Image (cartoon, rainbow, N blue to C red; front, side, top):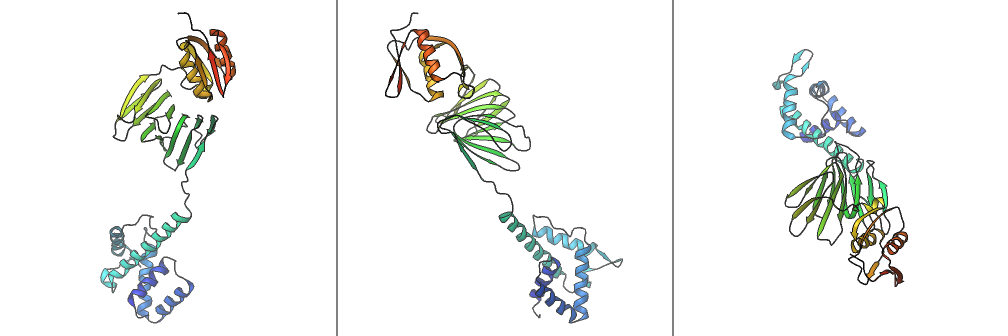
Length: 333
């Protein structure tokens, strides 16, 4: 083995315990070829094995490695004697070993990252035609409205959900892993809370309502708004504008709770909410859009609600081509 570069590589592999049996035997033959070779190897081996910094971190920096090795060479004691640099024929030799070890260990760590580290695989959950309730891996509860979907990806230090449609999130507190919802280009960051997001594809707005706690909404232009319990914000995409208000619609979460509270509500608004939640088609015929109704429904079927409304306002019910027709002559003021 006359090639010095090859010898240096071989010693580096042996010291790093990365050499094959054949390479170990080859280096052994080189060491046995002369006393000088053996002494040279022994000095380097002792410096390497007795250093308190033998173990190398996963992140390597060549300048740091060179500095570290120089410190080893200058400070390591063998047989109670400080070994001066001139005792080693080629001081750069050990530096090359350090660089080789860094490369070898660095490559090993890269291979580990590729083949053995747990990968973050996004998971898609869709509700289709029914409201779906489920639990995320961190125990966060999600109510996904009809025809909506989320894609969630959790790591060791982050939790992210992409939403298309409407969903209610009842979060599990985890300060080490912030929770955020992406609704189109709008970013919704949790500060320990339960909140609802309505962000259907194609819609010109995103609506966020906070049931408890606090959230921060940030637009692509870094425009932002902070919401606390009982507050709602409408984000107008085209204008990049937030409209903030105290919640006035008591039926915002009706798709989740199945509780409807109509307090002198216009008939048309009540019908729109029932259509939205149950995915049906109630139509009003006659001069009845101005009618108002006061009623509370808890976990009632759509048919029951329609019948109660019709009886209350003296309306007739017809079924035509998949639509439910409510018809009347009007309401007294």
